[in-house]
Image (cartoon, rainbow, N blue to C red; front, side, top):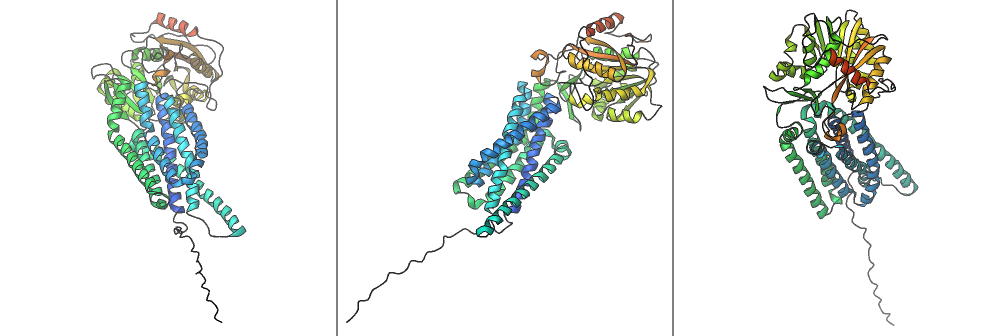
Length: 557
């Protein structure tokens, strides 16, 4: 009996799914950490650019830094939450985030300056850029975590695998934050020492944006190219090329843009515009016309009426011994010009922080003519130093005693000068004055900023001075209150209508307000004028506010 042959079907052999080879350990982690380092540096540069430019455009650097930092940190939290939706497509998501950050961060200074120049308002633009940049920076770390773990998985199994993944995740977080913090350090140091002096605020931001785009786009398109579809790869290439093209075009045209914006701010008669290490100096007007001098956008000298300010500041303080005169600030030379009109003045010491102001006041024909060539007078000595630190050293030299000290400084509401309106500074002045010396202080507008003015008065009292308030009216409308035209007095764009001064002497007895017997002929002052100026200032006196100190400044913008 023949048994039938049963033919068994062939067994199907299951083939393991073909996996793309994982990159070797470290080939992903190190490029990612390098890009984290670069992006963190770029992010901090954007942050510092906004703070620096907003302080210049709006004033009050403390307030602007607080607004930018608080809004940006809040937005970073929002960005971290929003990034959760992109983790499934982390590579393309990170590439788009970096391209957007490069474009927005790189052009932020340009747009902020344009809003100020042509619309006169930059606060809302500042907040908008802080929000946008913060959201994009906050999305970086979650997406990078996904990318770095995807390319750097340890091969383990079971409980050991679970523990290994936890350990590896903790190590990844530590590596990311270490690279992020070190990059922030480098960016924070590069901004003031490299980018700002070499490239300026506008070009520095554009170049930073280009570096950001190259780093972010290069990481995704090269290291994580296997995670991209053909469409995603084409999208990222097109977006990054467009961003770089915009940044490159803006960099080429930035000088023309800056000139147009400067004309929009200062008018068509800009004659000199220079950037020193400390500030921007602009002189407007013709060579034969009285010039206007702007420092960081604020009108410091109006050629048409500067004599009203400088005569009122200097001459009441000269009513007494005035052989030795100290001027704090006054790099334009106008206060020195008024002091030198007294033949009995033997020396005038001008302590000015920025050498560029003195250099321009000495060499520019219109400014030199306006200040009477004061810096060519052999009685004038110029010291380029911070007045606070210089006075601390002068108190140790007993021969450094002055009959007259004149504080020719910007309004006390401007934060960088606030320490020179503090009780500690006035205490240093008291130590270099002779017992019969007189101290004249420009204290801001009496009518438009009465709280600031009377805070200066209270601070002088706290430092041991007795004071006599007075003011001078008739100032030219302009940007003296600050460059942001929306912040001018009453929202009219005219600026404050008067200058407020305080004449102070050591002790408790207020000084007499008058002119010296040998005073030269003045265009704006006389005995009747000073009496009226004192009465006008006293009308606004109220309850004495607390004094301002270094650790508790009380001046508002």
